[in-house]
Image 1 (cartoon, one colour):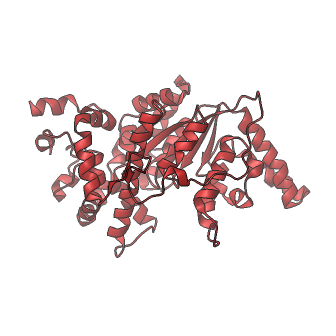
Image 2 (image 1 turned 180 degrees about the vertical axis):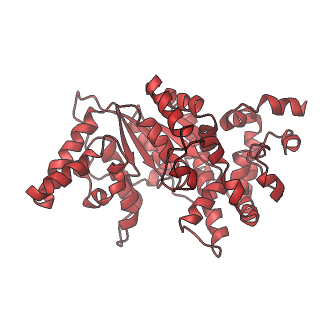
Image 3 (image 1 turned 60 degrees about the vertical axis):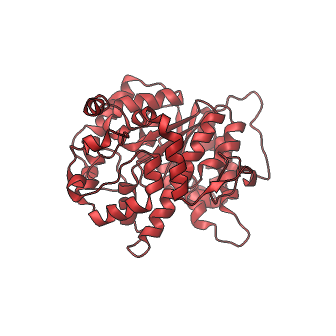
Length: 392
């Protein structure tokens, strides 16, 4: 019986398998919270969980609330909330294949790097910047935002700013060129049907007020197995061997808080939050791509389907050789599992220990041996209680 169920679920996406075990959700969540040393607090609005983070009532808003112009059709809002090295650039490229999408690549990146002054607050500046973009008010953004080449260079429509600035700078002062080009990108923003922003620097709970304010806003919560994510972050220099366990614990607890907050917000705003796993997208690209387009209200055309096929099952590219910023892959499913060939087993053991609560919540199974780590024929990364012993 167990083996039969395992076979029946082999073609399921990760999120479908997770839903199959929804009856165990409360038990697993309580276990995860206990291992996180958290407790309940009836004064906390987000799921009544005291998780060591400020509640929504402490969100710092823009002091200068500017409402969109009356009678103007504003673009629909789509947020990709995710984490560094979790495959979000891949999703961004898929979504902006729709010609009506105005895509922004990490609009808060330079803010985090520049907020160091006493009395300044990253969340305050982030909320201000985030809403300015959602309302197509680039003229209200600080100069530091425009210093980020990634912001517009990775966007099909937003790149108009830097091409404009390059052309206008020899003819104007820096300030005048920036003001002129800001109006250009504003027009492009306002003419777009959808604004897609990729965010890796804000917690899920902070979007409570945004979901209330923007009734058409939707959030895609993109999650990846923490083991390859942390492996990739280590390659970027985010941590070293000495602080690895502390870093992994902090990272996984952050993701866990977001997962629990997303569950709460989904109940408060039904149909407006989609939890998506990178592994599902990599292995079932067209199926999950269609689901992604359906959720966001975009038009999944033959062109989009062909594009997804070409960037996931095309000719070998630099991405296949480990190029860090690529989204075009000859075999996305194989590359999603490639980390298991090179990761050190000791590293996996440390991550499994540090991330126990998150692994439980995501139904991810710990990897007990090097042999099982390397054997890609085993679907041991997904657990179905009572089934996992048969498939591992």
